[in-house]
Every structure is written in structure tokens, then in C-alpha cells.
Image (cartoon, rainbow, N blue to C red; front, side, top):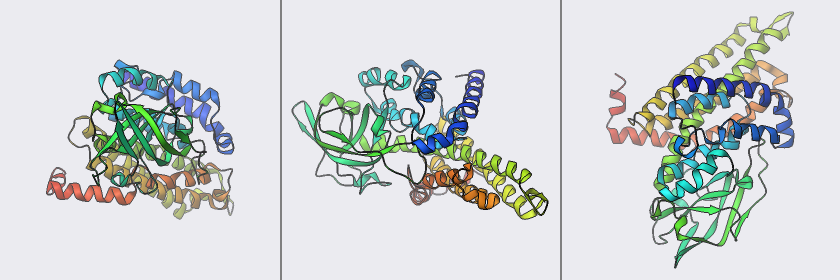
Length: 388
């Protein structure tokens, strides 16, 4: 995709978000669902397949382009991005990077068009940020695998058509060993998707439990055609997903800062705008400074992802900094709005609740710290030397 195409797409998405999604945020919040016309329009715009290769009907965006798009998508309720985030991200990328030619040809065009919604079924009650503890099992019987287990907090499960299910095929293995990944149609016999969860924030983004009771699938549904690729497929998808989530955080913080500046100019105390008070100005200035730092950090890391020089420490450090930054900006936003920032009808209150999840999913802040530190240990400080 060249620069002119990218510019046109970003402009169209920015306009769509501003005119169609932002005005309906309260409606989405109240209904915990999106109007159907927004879903259909998103399909027509290609948003279900921006990161899917062009040969399969997607837009074929690289990581840098993905980051810029994510910043636009992040300007509104983050549940908007979740509608198609799994197709492009953690679920779709499993197929893009590890699927057989036949699996890609069958599924990726339908994923890119939005005709199929894919979900990433990794997290379990006792295996969250560290997937090595998963207990879902897949036992081979002839030309089939029989899957038993349960998953939790699976985004888009209730509306999905196909699941990327991670299961242990070597029952004697522990840790990251013996994990494989399978294509499992959601309507397969023995698959049960629970009701979507009631969450603190991000209404409209549905997560659910999934149960697998003697689910039989053909052996050709083993992604990549080989066992024990699951852990590596999960980590590759999550690494890129962390860069994307960091970009969404930048978009969220941009929206909050815009709201803060506008409110500080019109809200008055003692007969003058609260923006005249230096401590309010400090909240705004600190938020802007951190936002600028996060944006620059994400775009630099995206460039390094694309040139292949860093696909681990950069995404984790970006996700750590941007999600923590967003939490601080959201907190300042409530403070600037004062009592109004605590009222459910204000966007600041909603974004404050939305923000809290970013420090948890796709690897908690604590996990990102471990990744960063371990990568520094492995590189014997090489990453630091590159900055000099």
C-alpha cells in the first residue's frame, strides 16, 4: 500500500469514526452492542481485513500503517476496534503466519471480507498472561482430534464463526511444550459458547467462556499441519498485537486530551475558564507530553517490526508504556472535569473505565516488564547500545 492510498484510508476512517461512531457511543454503551449499519459499513471499508495480505482480499497493511490506523480507530470507544480486531490481529495472524496454503486459501478471504469472524481461543481460567499453563487437550484418534477443555475471556466468541483453539497435544509435556493450534468451527458439535461477560468498561466488545466437550475435528484442521506450533504461533500473534494495542492507547489518550482541552476552555470557576488555572494547565501539559512520547515510541517500534530488527522488546515496551500512560491521562481527565468527570453521561467517565483493561489484556504490565528485562539480559545490553 502506497502513501496516497494510506492517506485516503486514514481520512475515511477518521471521518467515519467522527460522524458515525462517536455520536452513538452512549447508545453502544447502553445496549452493549453496535448498530448493524456500523458493522456493515466497516466491512465495506475493508476494516475486517486491513492486516490480511492483499492476495487474500485484505488491505495488506504493514505494522507502521497498522499503527497509524489503530490510532484513528482508538479515538472512539475501543469496542469499535474489537469488532474486527481479532480478524486482523491475534486470530487472523495465526493463519497468516502459520496456516497451510490450503487453510489460508479457504479461510483468509472470508476473514478479510468479514463474512467470517475469527476468535483467538487461548486464555483459560489458570492460563492467562502465561499461556504455558493451559490444560485444554487435543487427542488424536485416527484422522481426527478430540478436544476437551475450556477457555475464558474470548473476544468475539459469541459472534464468531471459527476459533483458533490452542490445546495440548502432548499430554506428557509441560510449560510451552506440546501445544498445538486448531481451526474449530464455532458450530461444531460439542462447542458451547457462554453468554457474553458483563464488564467494567468497553461495552459492545463481547467476551465469553467457551467449553469443548469431545469436540471432533478433522486432522487437516491442525494449523500448519504440524503439532507443537501452538506456543510459537500464540507468541508471534501476541507480540504484534501488543504493538497494535499500544497504538489504540495512543488514540484513546488523544481523544481524552481533546476533551480535556475543550472542557478547560468552556467550564468556569470564579467567573473564568478553569484552563486559566495553572494546575489544570499542568494536567493538560503532562498528558500531552506523555502522549507525544508514546506516539513516537510506537511508530519507531512499528518501523523496526517491519524491517525485522525487533519483534519482541519493542512491542512489549510500547504496550507497557502506552497502556500505563493512558491510565494516567484518563485519571487526569476525570480530575480536570471534576464532578462532571464522574457522571456516566460524560465521555471522560467512560474512557476512564475503558482505559483500565489495557494494562491487563494481551499481556499484563507485569508480563511486559518481564519480557523487556529478559530480552535485555539475552542481548547483553545491545538494545541500549543501539540508542547511543
